[in-house]
Image (tube, rainbow, N blue to C red; front, side):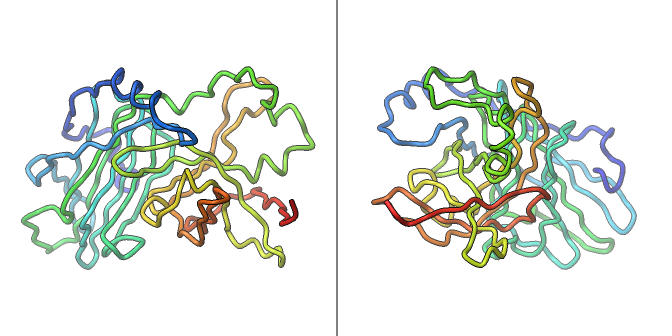
Length: 286
C-alpha cells in the first residue's frame, strides 16, 4: 500500500466472531506458574482468492484483503505453506498503524520452511497484500493456510505498577539507561496462543555485538516459538512517569540453546537491530 499509494483504497474485510474472553481468562488463572502472560489465541481463517481485491500497479498487480476479529484488542497474521513464484512478494501490516510492515516475503519465507509471521499491532485489523508481476497467471493463493491472532488482553497499554517494591520506572533513573536499552518486550506464539515475556541483549566476551538475546525457558524453548518472536526495544516511558514512547520492533530469532533446569534460553535475533541498543554483561558465578 505504501509503495503504490494504496492506503486510502479500502480492501475487503474478513470479520471473525468474538472469542470467549471470560473463559480464556479463567483458563489463564488456573494455569500453573511460572508461565508467560497469554493475551491472544490463534484463529484459522477460511480465505480464498475470491475474498480479496486485485488492483493494477506499475509492473504487475496487487491482491489485497484485511482480516479482523470482532472485539479484538490486538492482531497478527501467520501464513503456512508459503510458496511464491519469481518476482512475487507478500507484505503484512495493519491499516492506520505506524508499526513496521513485514515484507517483502519471497520464495518460501525467511526460514525457508514456508512459515511467515506478521507483527502484533494494536486494534483488530490486519492487512495482507500479494504482489504478482505482470504476465504471471495465478489460480490460487500462494500459501496453504492463514491464522489470525485475536487479542483478548490489551498488551499495548502500560500496565499499572504492581505493589511489589521491586518495580521501578527506568526512565526515572539515568544510571539505568544502558540496561533499559538492552531490554526487550517479547510477543510470540506457541501451541495456538500468543504470549508476553521479556528478555535482553547479552554481550559476548569479544564485545562484537552478536545479537544474542537471553530469556526464560518457560517463555521460549523451541525453534517454532523463536521464529514467531517479535521483540520491542525501547518499550517504555520517554520521561519519568510519562506515557509510552515509540518502540522499535525486531522480528524472528534462531534458538541457540535452552535449558529447563535453570530456566534459561539463548536466542539470536534475525532482524536488524535499531541504533542505541545495548548489550548487558553477565557472569557465571553464583
